[in-house]
Length: 123
Image (cartoon, rainbow, N blue to C red):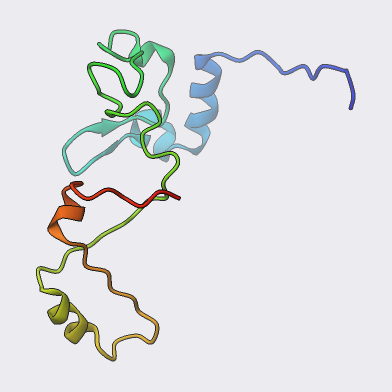
């Protein structure tokens, strides 16, 4: 491994603005903003200055005010689960999907599991 440090050219926000304007529609960086379905404007670039005045921006998960979750590691040790509820009883879902796709797996969790009342098995 080389001990030589790589030197990078120093940049600033103005340089980014000029570079972004080259690919922005009409050369206007503001045209890169987009609206979420909730009407929130999302900018193409955020810096530390954007979060400077936000309250509780330096909070940690597992500690009050629990903005980043109630557990210190949250669910880093559990795989993500994606569920979609169809509003049918288990048999109704199975009947609905019968013959749709070979190998389709339908898992309809109980209400206790959904609400977190039943413990997940440990790995």
